[in-house]
Amino acid sequence: MQIFPFIVVVWIVGIGLYGIVTSRHLVHQIMCLIVVQSSTYVLLLAVGYLTGGAAPYFSDIPTRTRAVDPVVQALALTDVVVEAAVTALLLSFAIQAHKRFGTLDPQELASLRG
Amino acid sequence: MTPAARRLVFLVGAAGLAVFYLFGLSGLPGFGRYPGPYGFIVNRVTVAQTNATGVVSAVNFEYRGFDTVGEEFILFAAAAGMAVVLRHLRGEHEGAPLEEAADRDLPPTSDAVRMVALLFTGPIVLIGWWLASHAQASPSGGFQGGVVIATGFVLLYLSGEFQVFRRLTPADVTAAVEAVGAGGFVGTGLAAVAMSLPYLTNFLPLGTVPGAVSSSGTIALVSFFVGLEVTAAFILVIGELLRQTLLLRGGKS
Image (spheres, chains in turn blue, green):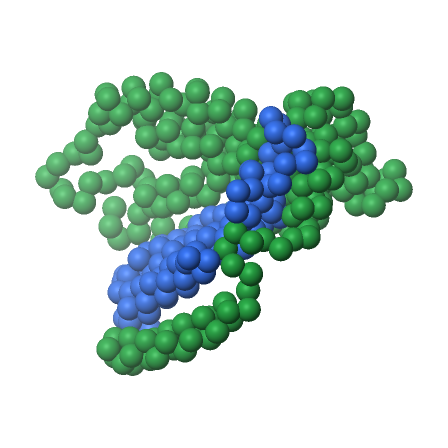
């Protein structure tokens, strides 16, 4: 079971991408992008995990305790913030696209562009 | 390209991805066998070096502080970008929200929703504040706390009307708070430079008790500024999206 978390990662990427490719609605497509990105949380935390390791918070455990990697956890935090920012921007683009073209179907949007 | 063809192309690509991914996995250390060394080193030195017992916050606001400046400005740029993208288009103006069906009025906010929302607003802002001010000792910090505080303002919106939310969070005040948050972070770094130390060096006294609120020097200060910035950025983003419900196209009203 040593590679199971990494299989989960690629599975999440896969279903997210499948959703993006087959999506008929921009908001749905943005949500699929969020799914793709959430795979990176699993990846980051899986990379830094140490069997039996404590959480990297030494408030109530001795500082010599073996703990999991805090650097990847900090990266996951960065990841969440960037995802929120990207999602907000994409949603505002979707709003403007709907105002302008009256549809949110990527297929129709592509054909409107000509 | 038809949807079916697109799906076929995707499946071929996904199969290729799966093959190369599995091939790549074969050389990696397995799950739970983190080889180090950075995580072990950071875990060992953080408490002694910074008096922060929450190592993740210490990494974010101290060891990777410069990266976090960039991260904060991604959020800053996104909030600014939304304001630009969602500006009033020609022929748009604000009006009262209309129910699309002409024969009924807007339903009033239910008393149950209103009461629960008002009841929770205070505690949620308090929890957010607690999170933002305990970055050095627990899995919290400015980013988490800021989002939670912004949620409190969204509850105000739920409990009443958009106009109440808007009166409580005027755009210029929110934007000023956001600027103070972003500027405070950068300024903390520059203050170190002014003392001829490297950018974002922890120049404040570290306190005596590891993990106390008064400990960890600039980590706590930067977390506070990040909390301000994130709160304001999220309120701006949410307000900008909610404002769209008031916009009417020239012809419709």
